[in-house]
Amino acid sequence: RDLEKVLPLLEMLSSNAMRPRHWEQVQATAGSKVDLSASDLTLGQVLEMGLHRIRDEVEEICGGAVKEVQVETKLEGLQEEWADIRFEFQSFKNKGPVILKAKELALIVEKLEESHTVLGAMASNAASVPFRDQVQSWIQKLSSVSEVVEQWTVVQSL
Image 1 (tube, rainbow, N blue to C red):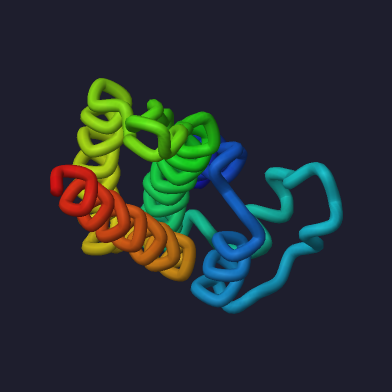
Image 2 (cartoon, rainbow, N blue to C red):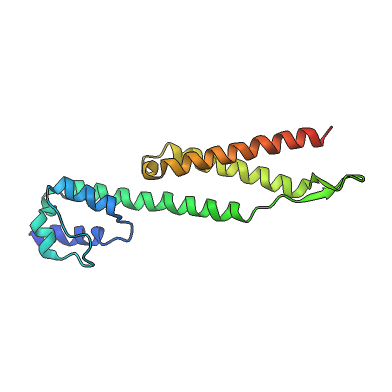
């Protein structure tokens, strides 16, 4: 019977979402340690730790790990998207390229709004706790960009 309880746990524990912080939580919950430097987790180790007796807690930790990976992936996607965004300028009279191009500016404003929405959801998501500093940093950066773009468009329209 223990094997029936342990096999699903092994599957969850073998997830690529499991990070050292999750293993530390599992160990703290189980009240025992496992060698994290070893590349294999054995059935004997799982049984020895008694993880089948704290199945609900382990499932919660593993489920949280999966949710955290989703947040991590979204943050990486945000980084990639913003790395490629460029402000395009057009010339104004004899002043040179000082006017933000309207089409590109509209796309940037739209991307700012989307990113603020995503980051707002992340900031209130419990799975974002390990990434709280990154999320707050992105919120601050994009808020600054929004303010600059807003001011630029006000000046540009004068």
